Image (cartoon, rainbow, N blue to C red; front, side, top):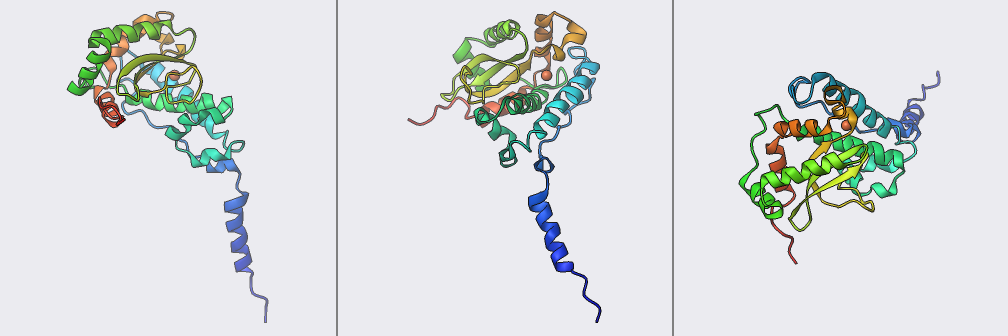
Length: 239
Ligand SMILES: [Fe+2]
């Protein structure tokens, strides 16, 4: 009788290879989300070429470079992008920079909408803004000053603190307010503005304040309202 083909050990070997022998990078789970609107939808405030380069090249590179870190940091496979931010101090700078870049840009696209399509601040959010800043205009003025004053590359944020109050903050490079790093004011980002030159230089060159002013026409307040509600709204945690 001819010997039987060794299907069973062959199959076991293949499974072992898949589970144990695959390179860690093959487990990479982070993907570049598509823009929620066409690249020209934010014109004239942000031009289509900037959006294409910013999303496809810059954000795309953060995702690719983060996925390239799986081999050296296999625990990445067990973390969501959100969870990673709060544990970023455990990881090397390449994860901090690219993981932050992926999170920041993913939120940034969703925080914007074509002019006139982003709704308005909800009564609950407006009340919280007035309690912390006096008025919506005063919050915007402080935000603008903070965004303009960020030296070099970084982000400006409107955050909800754990006690329900709101604050304006800024982070360098691709850091964000979720990160467990010294010098960062922690809170839930409700609104974030990318002030890296790659975000505005083609249209505005060195006129960052003009970019900041134009950006306010693009706010997706429906997203900001939902983020505020999801973070607990104006309620304070129980003592
Ligand atoms: Fe950017």
